Amino acid sequence: MKLVCVLLLICLVVFSSGVFAFESKSVDSTGSLPARFSWLDVDGVNYVSPVKNQVPAPTCEAYALCTTLETLVNYETESPNDCDLSEAHLFFYSGGTCNWGVDVKDALEYLEDFGVPDEGCFPDHHRAHDEPFESLPGWENRTVKISGWGWVPNEINAIKTALIEHGPLIICVLVRPDFNSYHWGVYRPGQYDVVGGHVVNIVGYDDSRQCWLIRNSWGDSWGRGGYIRVAYDAFTGENKFIWPFYGGTGIAYIDGVYGDLEPDVPKIWFTNCDIQHTYLMGLELPSLKYRIEGIQLGAPRIFGPHTVKLETANTDYVEFYLDQKLVYTDTSPPFSWKVKGSKGLHTLEVYAYNEKNMSKAFRDIYLMFTLL
Image (cartoon, rainbow, N blue to C red; front, side, top):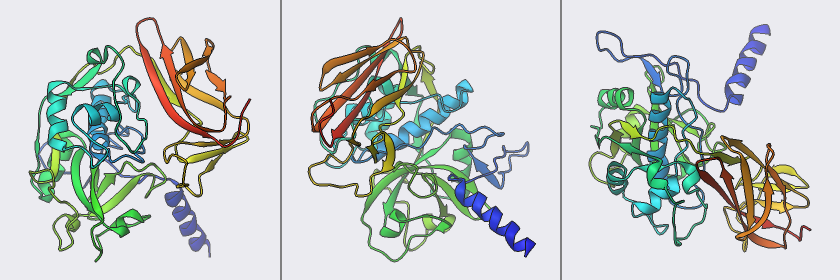
């Protein structure tokens, strides 16, 4: 009985942890590959940026590319989880469209030529349609660029080696319904029709389970904390997971980063304005019926009094704009604003300032009734 209880306790700990635990080891002096490796645990340090949610636009290519860059910057600067790059900038400036996405090759070439600025230059609007776009003035002076890129052969040891030497890999995959509903275990594509293409990251592997650890961009409520284990043989089996719809092998690496890796800019995040949540009298709840006709998919819904709260760094003061009108300036952290507005959809823009630069946060919000 005691043994059963211990086993149950272990299972609860594993399932409640959210993200897979991979032990990471370096390549030894003989050049042999370790049995396990993960950028989530390099000598006990997690260099992978937090999982994001691309909903509702088809911007997966930009999210996967920025994940790799953020990991490499975090590793180079020895500042875990500190780098946050603008997926929206990379997506639109390299030729992306919400009608289908962006060609990974075009985005990689853009990164070579121009780079991508931090998130504060162009925060994701989470809208499913194209519109005029522009990053903050001076974005060119706060970018991360890549030294080069290439394709990795679809072979287990080649993928492992590239993963360790170059960072998280960008892969093109075929999505089936069983991928959408993944929760646990090692995934192998089932006998289902392909419902679309998707771009994600390999961030680790584990020989004991014969699987890759893959990071998605559908939020941390998908899969296991935003991650999925995929069997080695899913890359080459009858129901293939990898598909080179952008050319090459469908597995790309980035060969180094350079530029302004640690820009002296304000950093700003919403702490209680999540796109997949409803706020009832200040209480945060998952939006149970996420798609409601007439309500924008990427807009949090607000019932009753609500105070927007921010997390900031390197910030002296912030300005809140509702529908492009300045409504409040806060000079004392922690910065916040009590929402006031009429029923319906509104745009909320927040600008953070320090002595040298400004950064921006953006959110569409849907007020379910008038807040005065």
